[in-house]
Image (tube, rainbow, N blue to C red; front, side, top):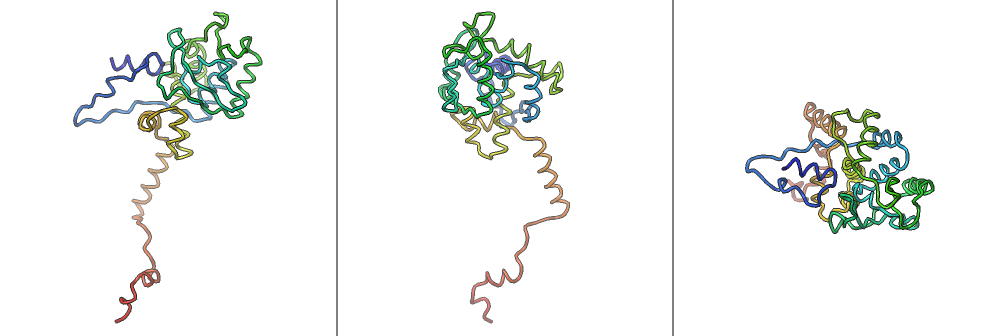
Length: 256
């Protein structure tokens, strides 16, 4: 059952957390999931192999951290070019428009100029460009519904990731990894958990830290090397010089 809920969470097929994740066995430690974190240049390798609308869809999720279900449910009226923001109000799951996954998920996410240009370019090409139209409308359904996330992942995202050498044929890969990658990179660069938390629209920072922020292998290796160097050199905090120590002594200590 744990694997079933994990699969549903990765693909946004369910609206509740895996109950198995709440089970704690005394004396044991939770095993971290092996989540592949993409560096910005790796994400671009994937994006550059796509054409619109998939190109804009992947860039949108990579830059904002919105869930695939939320991205597919966007209508042009939610994209606020004048305000540099995108309003997340609904999701598209199991062929139906539904509320967002949580109450805190219903919020705005920032839209920088570069992202706005991607969206404006796609809108100029799309036959579904009215305010009430879906941003990523399905051609097969004449724009009445959005495209499906599983189809886009299977036919476009995974093949692009394989072609870019990011994954192999047998490795798992999905839109949710872009969400993990964004939060990890933002936290690494800004050192501010609050920024990653608000980008992902989590009500509790513990969720951001415990699930969506991962160690950066290169930085871990660098830190380990620095620590090893310190051990081998026998380094310790620098001692204050004699002049500093004399100044620090109370006046009575200098009178013999």
